[in-house]
Length: 303
Image 1 (spheres, rainbow, N blue to C red):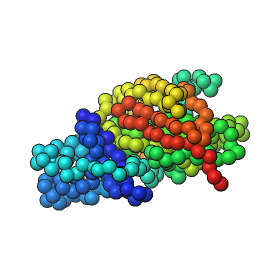
Image 2 (image 1 turned 90 degrees about the horizontal axis):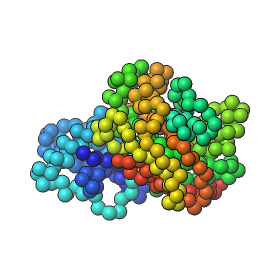
Image 3 (image 1 turned 135 degrees about the vertical axis):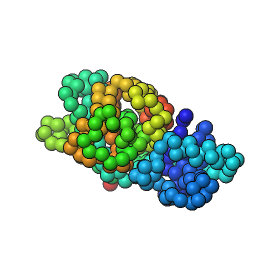
Image 4 (image 1 turned 90 degrees about the vertical axis):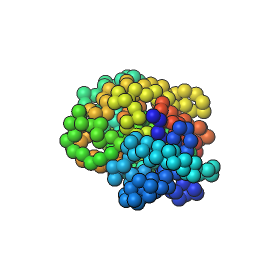
């Protein structure tokens, strides 16, 4: 069953959790309150933010299905349909950490003349780099080429350390899209100096994310999804997530050996071949099958 959750807002204020159910958008936060009154005598927390829903352990396909079907049976669902005039915000606005994989697709490693790593290469992006769907990627002056990188992002669902690969799926809440914007010339300069990659990855607006989060159980554990990135309609990147060198359980287990994972943490699973430069005025569309299309414009930053 296809279920896609999102943050909806009017103006700059988050209004609640939305859900696409049979292709229609509904206010799930209000639907949840109605469900509680009907089925649970009002017991249970309020769910206004996706991150809170994840942290409390309610972000499950079964939760969405139970609530929406209960309201359908009572012919109440239409009351919660979202009307026009809302925007879509960040699915998770304040993750504790954003961790990304380098060279996790063989063809991407080859296009940079590099070997596939013997173990996952993990680096960080600062949460302040997050940008919502429809936001503008701002190119700072004087830093050279800035490039796009479409990636499948895993949102962690519960706290875990030393996770066994066979248990890893229990720690996944769902999946979304990230465009790992990178100041490439600056990154290469830092490579030469043997400095960390952090600054080239973490300028403000360099982490567009969204628009939807798909609960873990919507997809099979193989997670074989098509990725594609287009700039002004031209396809730049295209691959399948099944081509990743290190799969999701391996990455969760590896990272959790040295860092405790917390609900809402974002793990970006690497980008395929075809990364390329962005220029002011570009329209960037990062698409992942079954999740959606993350769309952003590009402009120069006005200092």
